[in-house]
Length: 318
Image 1 (cartoon, rainbow, N blue to C red):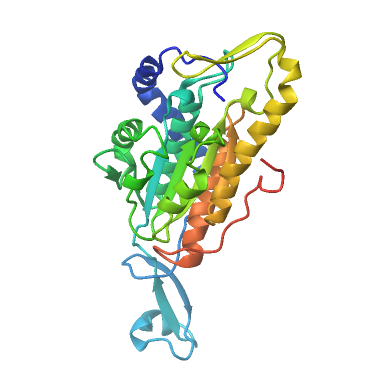
Image 2 (image 1 turned 60 degrees about the vertical axis):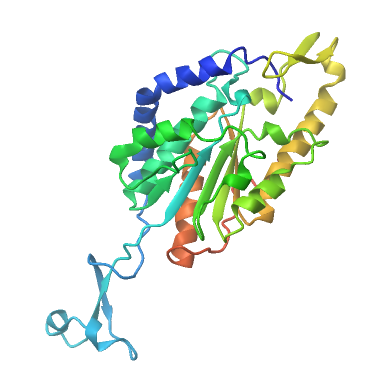
């Protein structure tokens, strides 16, 4: 289902890497604008930082009573500290050759948008005290936003296919996994590989996660007419249409089945599914991801799984 030629995805990948400082700055600005309106993922637990006082109730350990605060009034108070154990998040932007394609000038490539969202999410999580990694050969992980550029380079070196590499992914038990891709490798229903199997493999150790389906607007509503040639990412002809209008309805139906298969794979694994169109603002997708991941941890406690958050697009179809 590649819609046009990606004449040199290797050169496109190098160009993306060259723009990394600019993209990191853009990601940080996006994360900062969202962070100002978000509350931290604070919860009670072992730690050294004071959080709040609360009234003593029967059964509370006596060693948690703050006698100095209690002496100032008629009630006994417990001193609570903030949970400080970080959670592990793995962000996997899948830069397959088809990700470097855009349907027209003025619309960024899927790869560019994917990298911006991935870095911005990492920035938000790191400022919340979490650990963020990616699936490059070294399994790079960072704990400070000062090392975002290192993480971004590692993301560019992560595997460019899901089905062929998912069996080598070892995220750790009860970690969170985020996959951003166009998932075009699963578009051919005749292939034995399915997104459902891949996501089950990533989630096999009780890992929470999310799928972000990154699409060009032409992959939702194809703007073609008349004679058009369909090429794969190696510029090989895969289909020629003399009149695209005669095929448009079938094209849309096949695309919808493919997108639904990715959505259903996320739902079967109790993961979030979000669809992002490259012509739109990335902020709503970034906010949905951050809230889903952080709320899951708030509900389940550190390193656990919580109730699924209903996806804001789940009722509108694929």
